[in-house]
Length: 84
Image 1: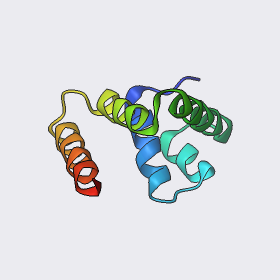
Image 2 (image 1 turned 180 degrees about the vertical axis):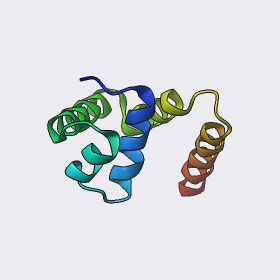
Image 3 (image 1 turned 90 degrees about the vertical axis):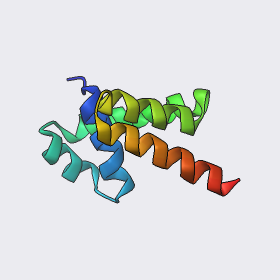
Image 4 (image 1 turned 120 degrees about the horizontal axis):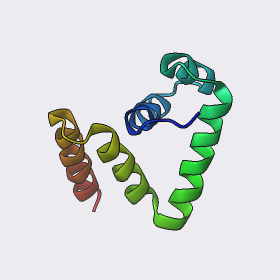
């Protein structure tokens, strides 16, 4: 079962907050194997394209058109600029 863009965005948020694969699978109503596969796929993509690009694309894809998505992207850019 493939995850929707919204589910991928939620997966990233939950994982960043320290949730386990099994906890995330329960929240997203899928299997732990699907979560593990998706995390592996995101990791491989980040090695090719860079972590910022993959992370931002996943969040934008999951939150496209939502005011919350725009706010998160703006916050990420501010955080990124403050590290420089």
